[in-house]
Image 1 (cartoon, rainbow, N blue to C red):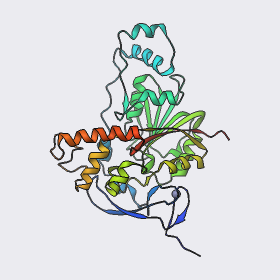
Image 2 (image 1 turned 135 degrees about the horizontal axis):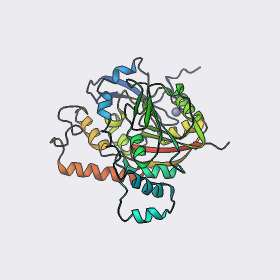
Image 3 (image 1 turned 90 degrees about the horizontal axis):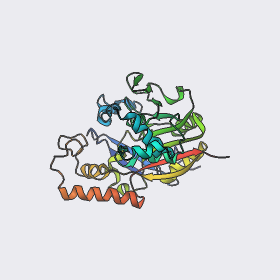
Image 4 (image 1 turned 180 degrees about the vertical axis):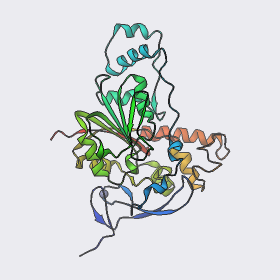
Length: 336
Ligand SMILES: [Zn+2]
C-alpha cells in the first residue's frame, strides 16, 4: 500500500502534492511554514495547521485591518433611503424621480472596487427587511456599516475573536463561533474571513443551515488561480502565511460549495493595487508593517510614481481578464 504524504482537506485527494515554503511577512517574523497544492483541485493549503493560531493575531491585528466607521447618517438619511430603495429594488417611486435631481446616491464600494449595490442586486434582495449576517467581521464591520447607510436594519455579525459582544448604530455583533448562532438569514457574507478558518466544510455547512430558502452566501477570498500566484509564488502578499490556511482555486471553492449543497452562480473579481505593491515588497524582503512599507505610508519612496501607475493598471487588467488574486463568489442553495 502506498502511503501518500498529504490529503487535501477540500477534495480529499491523497497524493504527494507539490510543496512550497512561505514566510510570515505581515509582521516580518519570517517564520517559515510549509504549504502544499492539491494536484486535483489546486487548493493551496498549509500542511500542518498550527496549534495555537491566536499567536499569529497580535493585539493590533484588527486595528490594522479595520477602517474608520462611516459617520452616522445625517439629515438627508430619509431621502437617501428613498434613493437607495429605487436603486436597489428597481421600483419607480415618483418621489425618487424628483429627489434624483437633488440627491446623488453615494457610491458605497466594498474595498473601493465593487459597488455594494451590485451584491444586493445579484442576490435578489427584495426589500429593507432582509436579514444579513457577516461572518468573521471583527469588532466593526465595514460591510454592515455600508448596508446600514443604505437603509437595511437587520444587521448581524459574528466573530469569536473579538473582545465582547458589540451593539452600535443598530448593528449587533456576537462574540462567538458561527456554530453557536441561531437564526435565519437572507444574505451571509465572508469578507476575507473563510481563508482563516481551519474547518472549511463544517463552517460552510453551518452557514448553509442558517440560510433562508432563497438566501445567498457571499464569499470573498484570495484566489490561487491568479496572475499574482503565477508571477510571485510564495511572495504573493495575500498568501499571508500562516494566517491564510487555504488559498482556494476557482475549482476548489466551487467544489467546497457543492459538497455542502451550495451552487456557485456568480464570480466577480475585485483585485486591489495592494496585490501588486505588497507582493513586490515581499520580493524585496520588506514586511507589510515595516517602517518603509508603502502599505503604511503612501509617501514612502520605495516605489516610483510610474511603478504605482503600473500596479493600478495591472489590478484593473487582472480583474477584467479574470486572473485577479481576489474574487467574490455568490452561492445559493442547490435545488436537489
Ligand atoms: Zn484537492
